[in-house]
Length: 211
Image (tube, rainbow, N blue to C red; front, side, top):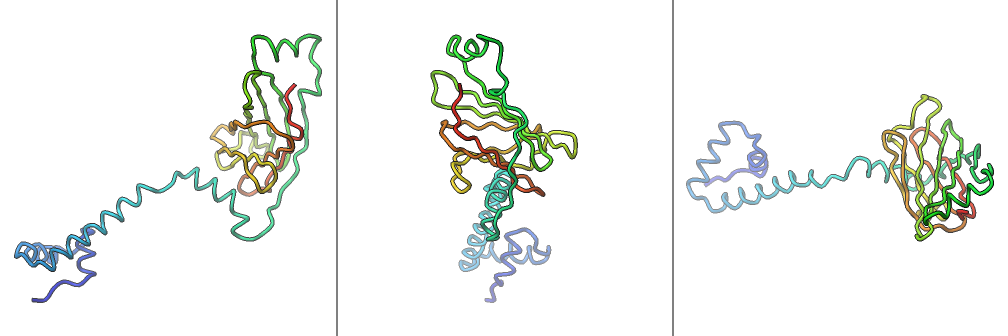
């Protein structure tokens, strides 16, 4: 008895066979051909595996994060970057006598350091909070695109690292240009902002110790 080709079985398993072929295959299977029953079972499993594989596709924002973070390593080219300019530092703007100590210590509440940087047509507003009873610091920021006069859209990532090659944490920028990173304070940290169509923006968080 002549059996069906692998291509015929593949089409049948994917439900793309011509109607006349489908009728012949179904009739043949009902006749009890053991070899074809085995082929049908095998190709059915292959089809289900291919269908299920799509369910394991990683989230789009994670793919973007990996591509932006590893793009230069995969091409072998040196990453281009721009050092951001500091335009505001809350620690350089003394508050009224007694206000700062009250903010930092009353009831164990957090102390806050705010800085604003600019580079590559971006304004980066950063706030670092550190609670007195916690080792962790919280970095919350928003990025404003001066070219489009609106928050930077969700096509960028923010990466915190000890140096340019050793990432500590990363965050994807949301549709409002916002991001959040929790980390343990240490000296000489580097914040990198990577957005498509721009040089990476680097912000040195040197001697990060909240007062």
